[in-house]
Image 1 (cartoon, helix red, strand yellow):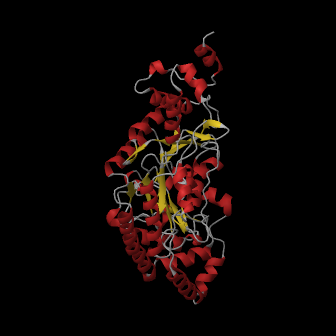
Image 2 (image 1 turned 180 degrees about the horizontal axis):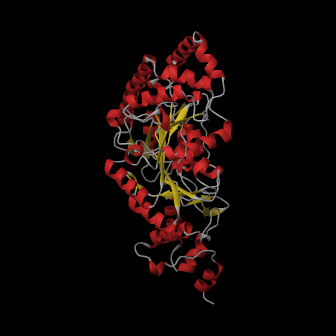
Image 3 (image 1 turned 60 degrees about the vertical axis):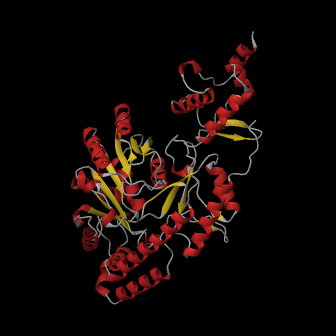
Length: 473
């Protein structure tokens, strides 16, 4: 038996290169991607040692080494000294994502998408609670059990405020929730059965990923481009799978900051009607009316749900939001909420609605908008010349790392310089490979000077390039 034949018999995985074109190393990487996508190679599966695969294919070890490096750059595999190269375990892992910062005390935290810290928030809430204390009738109403859908008065207040923000809706369309995440979970738990399929952008909000996993749903990724979810890819998926719901962030995708065009929204609506899909639109990230597109609930009101929360404009700790839903789905969603918690807390709703509809809240929103503008200017100053996306109203930017950077190395080396970032893995749906990109949040530092220092350190790191890593074995 020849060396090549003996090597082929020992390989746990072997690509058929005669069906592929282009450089051999890229063909091997492409074949790896295909085997991972179709399930031939499962997460954690070991790849053949480089010399063994080189002998089996009749190529040099350097060619296989280059192929494995290309696959690692794409986020398909991971190499560790002493344990070889394995398929990256993305789909089988719980995302390493937390809503609380894991930054060290001295580190500049650029990892979380949160409102800009301000003592004004606490002062305004204190003033709101003082006003409530002089309204014994309102307090008495809040202490009673609330309707499943939420207090009619609070729903009307919230609907009027949203309508003033050019998001017209009525109180009858709203179900009050304990934040945006609760609205997301409630919609999935009530409308989708375990084992059914939902779809979203391939890179999406980790809370959606966690909710779908917790509920035992099949969560499928849809490829994206610079306008968001690709209609052609969604249609191909619908032709192969029975999809019940698609989750979208059309104004400001988290993490990529992509905003969906009007034409793209209408194409998605056409597909949703053709394949009878529900649309769950996340509108938690506040976008000013002048920069906002048409929400899906205006384009397809009969099948669209809209999530609102005060987490990004007032404070995340309030845990107050709402779910706008078609009239036909309100009874089912109300029953689902009743089974979970009877109703949302009336006192919290009273405080939030009093604050949100006051002039103070608008002043706070306007201040945060001006501060965001200044922080985006810092971003453009320090990362000029690099490939990043950022929405003017967004709390973060999405930086595509230049070669030969890998996201894991960039995050590690940024941490060594006192800057905390989050890895791209928590945003990846299913077996979607993690891109060589990082999310940079502009809002956690209390002061612009701290943000500027953090961005300057990242700029210096990008200019220097990665430190040499250990060779693959």
